[in-house]
Length: 218
Image (cartoon, rainbow, N blue to C red):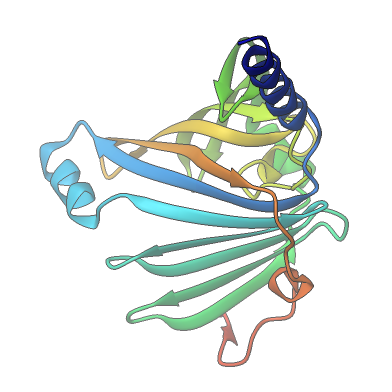
């Protein structure tokens, strides 16, 4: 019995230690759901279904892939050192397009963003995450976000680039509220799996792949 207890305690301590060390390389799986207070809009969102995102990361670089039968495929690659972001879009009617740009927000952009460090914490996948409350304007619309971030994941996130260095850590959970066509929409994203494994440098390249053309006007 004593050996079993010791073994159990060692396993628990190992899990805690693993959760507290900063992970430099691995894969995150996240589930994203959308809902609206408008019945017609809500029906459309339900028809689209939930989205699943896979994020590969190494150091401050990350690659997030999402796929949806209704909206197509989107890949966002962020290089935290180069301060560059590559967006790959593959949609019916649009084709394969890419956008490559700096994600450093201008002073004008930052004027439309307010960030408040909250008093709450939330445990996600064993990581204690810090609350941030963000309010910003996006395409003329008010957007409110509540996110919980951890400093135990080294990657840069495309969800925090618009906030400069006002948000610390990688968001493992966030809720975003916005208004579109007179309807309120709430987007919830939560990381559901974290795996520590090697990631190929090719996945994190900022060079657009063959078959993709530059998005006009970008």
